[in-house]
Length: 239
Image (cartoon, rainbow, N blue to C red; front, side, top):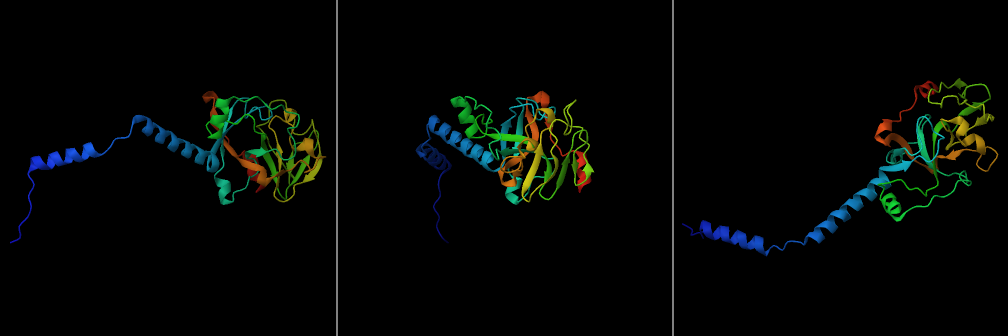
């Protein structure tokens, strides 16, 4: 018969208490720093790879988007090769000094810090937001007094700002969209310096697909404007 070492219950409890006392507890400020660091890493990762907030600076997308609205932009799907589609509302980097006449707003330190981690829009970024009307290989007809046509199909555009004309204020005739480029227009056509206004500049008014930051998929703020941004049904007819 083998002999074993037995520990009395009281001795076991006392040993456990000693071990817990020996385990040094971090000061509260160290715990707080760790939590803040983890939160910052998660926020930066979210902004870099998944979702970022953007502020609407002008009325070019009314009434779909109002000045001051905050939209969330999907930056995740492009990592898997997804490209902008007709009807998407996209945020993109200025493709050719489109914003040269726009003043750069003054930004506070708090705004810079929040925008750095993606918790607030970056007010000093030169980005634009428009609707994709046509993609590479498409033909766009933009004539005064007529609807916009893509590949010969007239678009029904209920999202246009009331009273705005599809192309009446800036007709450009027929354009062919090059490969890996986009033709974009604002929903308030009469208040949008979109692709139509840059056809005689380098780049021809087209937006390179690589300039697209992501697709705006929801209006997140203010809550009274909350809503998703689906692709309008008229674009389904284009195949």
